[in-house]
Image 1: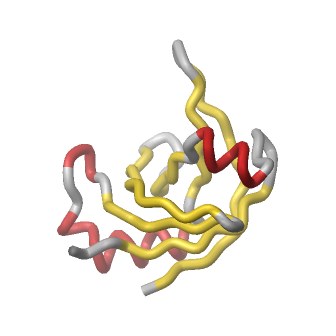
Image 2: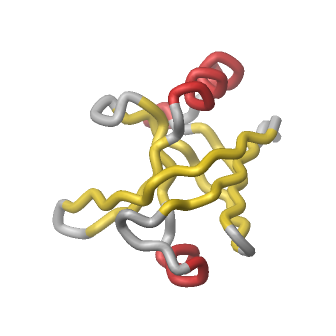
Image 3: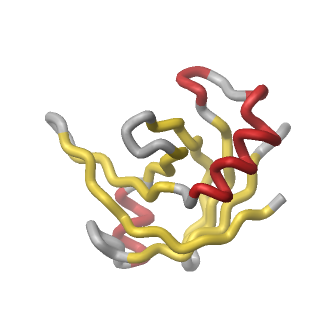
Length: 98
């Protein structure tokens, strides 16, 4: 199943900065219902993501603070796609089940 949505890029900082987009509630609920039982460590769910011309594999992570799944955006993707905090990312996401 392919999920497509737009979401704002946000930054979480501790000693280092991490950048994420939060999944919309409907997509997060559907993913939880369909794939939540397959979750790995920390409740993560493996996905393949496309933003612009960048495609990569990563994991979604449940966030109690955001009350949804969050998708980390690595620096190479943010740079290639011109994304920074506050940017809107058009995301295509497929859950990896193999």
